[in-house]
Length: 245
Image 1 (tube, rainbow, N blue to C red):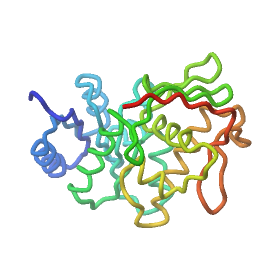
Image 2: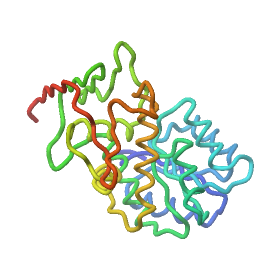
Image 3: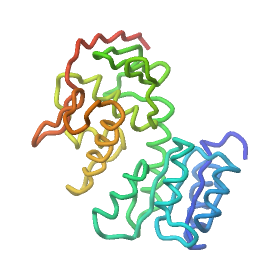
């Protein structure tokens, strides 16, 4: 399929779910591959190099957590997890294994399409409040290069997923000001929280980001928790070098 919006790998052990999602996503302009279990999912990922994976949790031959963990060893491809688990802690587990977002079954295919569109759009180009960020921002030993979409800590290049970089870029662009978790969720994931537990995705991502940029994540130097508000990127001689767009 030529001139598609991107390639999606749908992984679910229910044939009906795979058929519905393939039809809806192809109608939306995506190229779609499918897999029915964990082993097939990893094989299809290697064979097709998708732009995004829709990954069910409960599957035979390796559940979604295992598949996500294996893929994260070699790739930063965007992953949306589908879960029928009702407990919030169970839903968050997928994020801790490296997923970028999750939807709880039963879900609306229209909502899934919206999540996919948002993630892939953020991967291609990130903008906040209508202003495209460009140039280099230096914060102490941390350097964030928005043009090349990479971050460096001292002499070490940081391995960040696209959403992790987007989160870092947002916080750095607002250095010195607290950003609420609701604002972060809306800016990075593209949807307004409906329930308090929706905000947990932000906490998990901040924790993941801290583990990569902080010397001691339990006593962070860069990303500070603002109790009752959200998170603040501490000013450390930050010098934005923005380029007009």
